[in-house]
Amino acid sequence: MPAPMMNPMTIDDIRSCIAERTTTATALAQDFYTRIRKEDPEIGAFLTLCEERALAQAGRIDAIAAAGKPLPPLAGVPVAIKDVMVTSGVRTTAGSKILENFIPPYDCTAVARLEAAGAVILGKLNCDEFAMGSSNENSAYHPVHNPCDKSRVPGGSSGGSAAAVAAEMAVATLGSDTGGSIRQPASFCGVVGLKPSYGRVSRYGLIAFASSLDHIGPFAKTVKEVALVLRTIAGRDPMDSTSAEVPVPDYVAELEKPVQGLKVGVAKEYFGSGLDPEVRAAVEAAIQKLAELGCEIVPVNLPHTEYAIPTYYIVATAEASANLARYDGVRYGFRAKANTLSEMYRLSRDGGFGVEVKRRIMLGTYALSAGYYDAYYLKAQKVRTLLTRDFDEAFKKVDVIAAPTCPTPAFRLGEKVNDPLAMYLADIYTVTANLAGIPGISIPCGENHEKLPIGLQLFGRHFDEATLLRVAHAYEQVRVSLVVRR
Amino acid sequence: MKVTDKDVAYVADLANLELTEDERARMSRDLNSILEYVARLSELETDNIAPMAQVSDRYGVDESRQGSDRFAYAIRDDVKDGLRKSLPHEAAVKNAPDTDGTFFEVPKVIER
Image 1 (cartoon, rainbow over the protein chains, first blue to last red):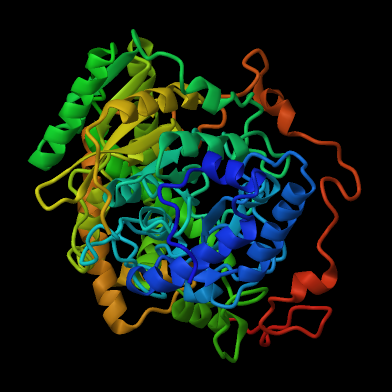
Image 2: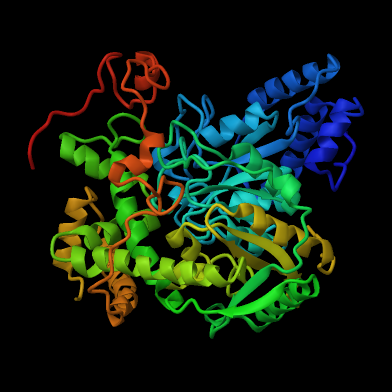
């Protein structure tokens, strides 16, 4: 049996251990696979393992180390990818039966960049079908259990990505965030999760849900590791015209700059009714820590916050109804037996999509249909302008905004599956950053009386992940130590 | 604006979904509950507010330029084999449920 994992092992530790030849990328990958086989049957974070690809990459890293050549920045780091990012030759399902046997012919840019930086891709991670959900219970394959309490959800839609890091089955993972799908599971599982600014990370190869809201971002145990992964995947990609031509700072170097004098906004709209008292207390204590670090706490107003969920569920479903029209059984994916083309479309989609995906396609199609377009879709787009202006005004006064990531800690499996609206409200504090396109991060800031993790959320100015990460890192150094249990 | 069974049937048709009787009943219940919540958007006066379809035109663009010139960075020359070669034919049809190796094959096309 291999030795137990050298925990906690960071990206920098891994790289220097491989450089010093005290371990190899191959041995490390094999250790992680052993661990996954032992732990994952009870958690369910992985949908597909790609050992052949992982060991080939590990072999390349070991050859570089053996030759004494400089190692790339993520050399040998075991990572895993939410199954909404396509991987050449490795099955990619989006958590849906409609793509059960889909083998993509190309790699998502973010995945290719991780691999080019030396990371070892262990496999593909479970998620809500087409990233639609807040509990991972909409996966067409199996639910994910929260490693902190297996009777509870890991959050969603990137539940597998958060759980894999929490259970130490990967050092870092990629997720996607359309309304909170990175930050909410990071909060529920007690890990760090970052949704970068819109335009910061290429979405080429990300299976589209709502194109004006979709983002790719990293999960890891620490802010520094999230910064390392962001530095690797960020920046303009000619294959995605929405990836912006904006320079990428060295996020890791920026982490150590002092935070003294930075202004931290606090908006009462994020502390209203419905916020769990223990979550409130933990987040308020974290804000107090920021004050002790020399940050100035400044009240700000985000008056349209209460309209964010209805705005989001119109915009997101409208875009989803268009994006998911491509699943018609013609070129790839599930095809039902049928006698005519139109029957084939309908039966393939009916058989391939789960209930939540159908619900969102229906809602989005309704909101875009003649007679309802102005009342729903156009109205939501206008309110989106108001929500974005709220942030524009607030960021004239402050550098970051602090809030809870979620109104409650992780809820129980099955608790909200029959009430879509209650499930949507789990995203009440996260959807705003997607609508405005600003970056947001969730970092652990405490536990409730049942030892369930609580997340502190920080928002930053557009493209200012550097300040966001710096404040999160400074807080991480002074927060009360959190016991990670499994 | 209450969603009726007729609306559900019409929208399912637009969306190319069949839906069972049970699913249709559930769908009209769920859509009504969600849209009732969405109705609070009408509390806001938005007559003079511009709609926002996306955030790309707010950040990371050349502010001194107008219209599509603001996104000049995203434009490339129109050349054969632009950014990458096209997928080989074989790769493009590899995931097809039904193919003769050249084309995607589908059932006969008859209008409903």
